[in-house]
Length: 212
Image (cartoon, rainbow, N blue to C red; front, side, top):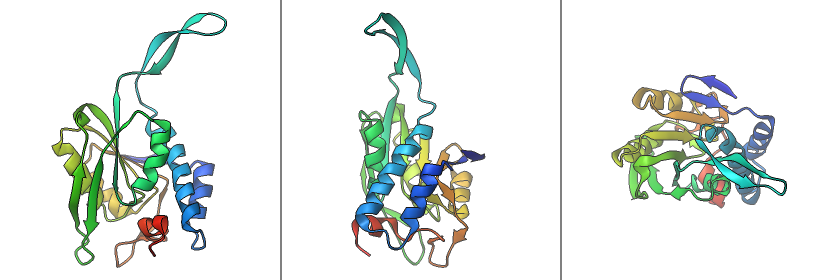
């Protein structure tokens, strides 16, 4: 893993291999969904590295011992609809007891600004480690909108996760929300004139659900 300030790039060989397969135009939707889930599982290892532990008494077949388990820190997973749901399956497989919220955003294709159409966040999010899930960090407008919404619900421990990021999107979060960590698997070159990550992998939602 490499670090650039708030940004953490997860460059594990397994992640990079699977990401290359996701980028490929010939990868069908069912394989794309599976790869996104697998990468999300691998990402969770680093994203949850700082979860607190507590010791409990455990009875092994040989003897009793003190051994660590996760403490009572709550985890909340918040996918940005619709593509973020593709990452949810992987994360929740690792943290099955996590709370789950949803934020629906759409992008104005002319201004590239994000507008919300659905917000459903669980009670207690203010005391949780909140992970925002969105495969693509492009302009940063959707990411910043989601972070602002979550902060209005009193969350303070917030992490943003993506599969790919553009420098413009990373900079947007760093400027507006310098307290939010960013995890991604690759920092691509730039945004094109339409606001898509280049070289990227296309529209993640369309590729997930076959709506190209």
